[in-house]
Amino acid sequence: MTRRALPLLLLCLSCLFGCASRQPTERILLEPFALQGSDGRTHELSRVLAENPLTVFVFYSESCPCVSAHEPRLKEIFEDYRGRGVQLFLVNSERGADPQQDAREAQRRDYPFVLLTDPEARLARTVGAQFATHAIVVDAEGLVRYSGGVDSDMVRLTPDATPHLRNALDALLAGRAPEVAGRARGCVLQLH
Amino acid sequence: MLGDGSGLSRWALALGGALAVLASPTTARAQACCAGASAITPGRLELHEQALVGVLLSGSTGLGSYDGSRSFRGTPPGVREIDLRQDVVGALRWLERGQLGLQIPLHASWRRAPTTGGELGGGIGDLSFSVRYDAILNREYRYLPGIALLGGVTLATGRPPESARLPLASDATGTGATQFSAGLALERSFGDVLLNVTGLASKRTSREVSGVDSELGTQWLGLVAVGYTISDEAAAACVLTYTHEGDARIDDRVVPDTASDRLRLSLAASSRLADSWRVQGSAFIDPPLDGFGRNLPSSVGATLGLIRSFL
Image (cartoon, rainbow over all chains, first blue to last red; front, top):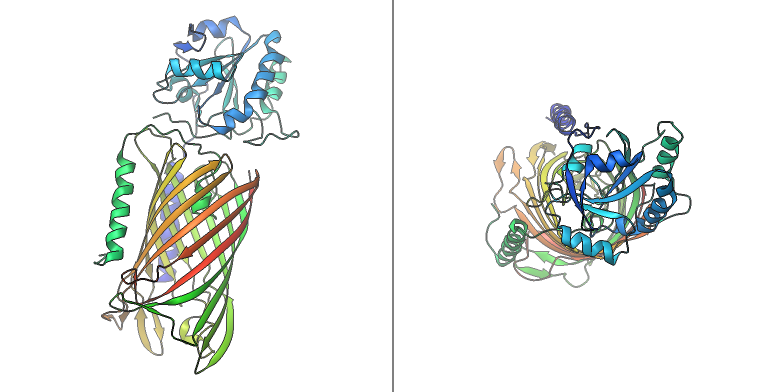
C-alpha cells in the first residue's frame, strides 16, 4: 500500500501546486485613471506620467512595519532623484483605503511625497504587486521599467543592503535597462 | 467522531468561538511580514523566507495517565519518566506559495519502575516530510482568512514498541507504521492578534506484528492558536491542540476501547535575533485532570529552538 500510495500522493500534490502558481503578467499601464492624493488633489495618472521622465510608485500599507522601516530611505530617494526628473509616490491600494485617513497618516509621518489612495486596488492589480514596499518605475509612455523591492532589507535596515530601486533608477537615467529586480519583502497587501 | 466529555466540550467551545471570530467582517490590519506565525509553527517558512534549518530541543516528564473512562491517575510511587527530544527541521520554498518541510527526531528516554529499576534508551525517530501550500495568504482578502493545504508523510524509521530491547521500552522511538496526513489551516489576523485554526487527519498503514496484522486507528488533530504580535519581531501564542485516535484494528477487526484522546495546552513565543535568525520557546501541559484525555499518558514539558532562515 505504501509503495503505491506515496508516488500517487506526490503526483497529486505536484499537480495541485503547479496549477495554482500565480505570476504577475501585466507590465503596461493601459488605462489612465485618477487617484486621490494626500495633498488634497486628484492626480490623473496619465498626466503624472507625462510630466515626469520616470515616476516611482511604492505600495503602502498603514500597519506594515516594513513600510515604516523604509520611510527614511524613501525620503532620501525622493530628495536625491526629484531634481533628476523622477517623481515618487506612495500608493495605498488596500481594499477600502480611505483618502482622509491616508492624508492624516501622510501628515503624521511627515511625508515629503504624496500618498495616493487606490481603494479598488487598480494600480496594484495592474502591475501584479502583492506586497507592501513593492516599487514600480514607470516611464513617460506608461511602460513599467522596473518592478520589485526597494532594497534587500525587511524591517531591520542594514548598511550593506542592495539598493534595488536606486540601482534601477540610476540605470534608467543612464539609458540602460535595470539589471536585477529585487524581491519586494513587505506585508501582504489586502487587494480583494 | 470526537465523542463526549468535559475536555471535548471546552474544545468545541473554543473552536466555535474561533470560527465566529473568523467569520466576522472586521478590517484586518495585520503585520504579516515579520512575526506571529512562527510562534505557532516553528518549522514553517515565513512570508519571504526561501529556506530554513533549525534545531528544536524539548524535554518532558510524565504526570500520570488517562484511563479508558477519561479519569486521570497520577504516576504511581517509584515510577518516573523523562523524555528528551531533539528535532532537526528544514524547510524549502518549492513554489511562490508552496513549501516542503523535513523533520528528523532524535529521542532519549529515561524510565524507572520499582520492579525493573531505571533504564535509558533512545535513537532516531520517525522521519517526517510535509508540504504546505498557501492558496490564500493571510490578509490577502478582506473577508476571507488565509487558507493553506497541508500534507505529510511520516516514515517508520524509528524503532517500534515490539522491537524494543529494554524492559520499559525506553528505546522505542517510533510507531512502526508509515503515516499519511492531509489537512487544512486557516489563519487570520486582527490587528496585532493572529488566529490559527488547523485540522489534520492521519492514516497509518497496517503492519504485521508477531504474525498478526495490526493497524492503528485514524488520527484527527485539531489546533486552535491565538498569537499576539508583541513587536515587529516578537510574538507569543497560546495553542490548544486536541488529538483523537480511533480504535485500532487487528486482523481487520476493530479492537474496542483502544481509541485515545488528548488535549494539550501550549504557550509559545518567538523572537527574531536578526532578519535571518529567530529563537523559539514553548511550554506545554496535558492537564492532569479528569476528562482531558483517554488511554494516553499525560506530560508536561518545554521546547527551545533556534532557526536559521534564508531570504
